[in-house]
Amino acid sequence: GFTVWRSWDEPGGIRDQLVQAAAANPQVAKLVKIGTTVQGRDILAIKLTQGANGIADGSRPAVLYSATQHAREWISTEIDRRLMNWYIDRWRANDPAVRSLLQSTELWFVPVANPDGYQYTFEVERLWRKNLRDNNNDGLIATGDGVDLNRNFPNHWAYDEEGSSSIQSSETYRGTAPVSEPETAAMKGLLDKIGFAFQVNYHSNGQWLLYAEGWQIGTPTADDPIYYAMSGNLDEPAIKDFHPGLSSDVLYVTNGETTDYAHVATGALAWTPELSAGCDGCGFVFPDDETLVQEEFERNLPFAQSVAKSALDPDDPVSVLGIDT
Ligand code: 0X9
Ligand code: ZN
Image (tube, rainbow, N blue to C red):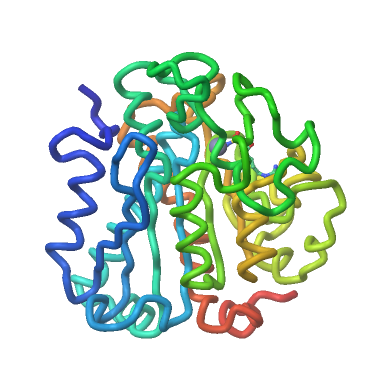
């Protein structure tokens, strides 16, 4: 067994932990089923806000921390899960800053946006990326199956072959239509319903802090000064040693990508942090090492907190955070 990593299905796994976190903290946490996967698993979100179960979803300024659209990127689930627990623990300990934050703001967590694929990486193929769509309908999951959930959103879906692929076996296969996948519909439904001020969509790896839009180089939204202010610069990045920048510019172009949709269709400012590998050459396989995982969490905590604090006044992080646009 692993020290750190837990699958979705196992007893005490991520699914159970989300259910239990909500059940144990009904005054601040609400479990929301946002959809059902191709194979029938629940897609689960947790909302944290004071009086979570007695107040309508989306009635306060909101932030979404999502993770593991790509099955193999386990560190992203772990960062998201630890962040959720950090807020719950601080709330339980009566931390005045967290109490006050959660009276005014909703923090949403989707630690596993692709539960089928995530489970598959524990049981069958550690480096699986996509969902478990049976592309050729042969009743089996094999190489060639799956849709890249981060290419299946409506914004500029299928815009070109560089940013996504029409070929089923490609790792960036976009699916047969925008939102063809139930996992995409679940995330899109949540984005549409809540209207988040910010989304932080954790992926791995490479230590990038990417912001939308990323469907072509020079996409005009990068002129939003708040992105610059909140992401920092090369000398002083908002996440230590993460290179900030427009996703298409510093990494590569994508289309049908999640944060582009969140930005253009729902008005969120949306980032894709590409978390650390954990060692030179570890790639997507972050070491099963509590110290390294906790270090990665602590590295990511300040930016996650800044985003949460800014939700109260998303147009003016300057006044909230004291940073200069
Ligand atoms: O390709 C992706 O979906 C993300 N990288 S990953 O290695 N985790 O697969 C990056 C998406 C960020 N958006 C753009 N680069 N436009
Ligand atoms: Zn990814």
